[in-house]
Amino acid sequence: METATAGTAALRLRELLAANRKTPCATLERDIIDLRLAAFRERRWPAPRRGTIDDPPLARRATLSDIPASALDAEVLRDGIQGAGGVIVRGLVAPPRVEMLRDALDRAFEARRDAAAGRAADARWYGRASGVKGAPQQFGALGGNSERTTGSLWAVDSPAAAFLLCELYHALQLPTLLEAYLGEPGVLSVKKWVLRKVEPKPDRQAGWHQDGRFLGDGIRTVNLWIALSACGEGAPAPGMELVGGREPVIHPTGTDGSYFDWTVGPGLVDRLTKERPRLYPRFAPGDALFFDHYNLHRTGGSPDDTELRYAVESWFFAASTAPAKQQPLVL
Ligand SMILES: [Fe+2]
Image (tube, rainbow, N blue to C red):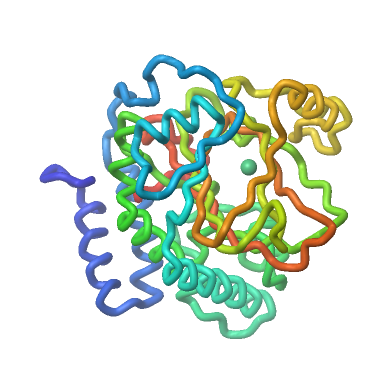
């Protein structure tokens, strides 16, 4: 994305990425995180340009698009996200990379456990870059709630995993796809880039929510959720449950029988799903789902689930709209 006018951090980032491809090490990988943060701050992001996101609204459909990876382009992305509420992309990530990422997640969570237990943790797989601020406890802030090897972990807190993921995004040519869709570069953020290992919990009542509820006004987003386990309908691990179709509104929360003040109550979901389907798609490892901040969803589950679900959630913001409190970083 950088040009001849690339700033100091962007140029240094390029050097460190090349060095880490040759000889990966914890120091480089942490510095890369800091440089991604600095490169976002040093660049003057233009006001939003017109991208395919701004094209006239599409006729609404209620069932997600479902396409092979070879069919993915900006127009298909727009049609799926804005016309249907989301796009399932089959086989976006090839099996060898799926294996590598599952292994990366295991290493990251194990290193976090080691750190929490006071043992020497592998700093490539769990460590905090100096520029990363804060963390809700459930996301494994250093020293907090971290002895579990399941749950959620900020990708940036596993510098080696973050490096591998960005290499994957570039191999998939996501920067080009996102720029065509958003009309400007897409950027990641510290807070909305998460590694997840979700336990099967037959009695779980996960909260229905729209991520736009937490992210502020005026944003333009694409979430890429990559399944690294077979999950969802008929699979042994918890998947993603969604309301099909897209309504560009943020629904009220804390009403209609909702347990938390940030979740959409089951009564409201029942009313919405009189008109729109409730979906529990099946995903194979490497399948992905794209949607945006209006999508209404929750972690699903079945009483028959027996396995962990590995996944990576990556929210991309149109750079000029990325909220500072999410701590944006360049891809
Ligand atoms: Fe969500």
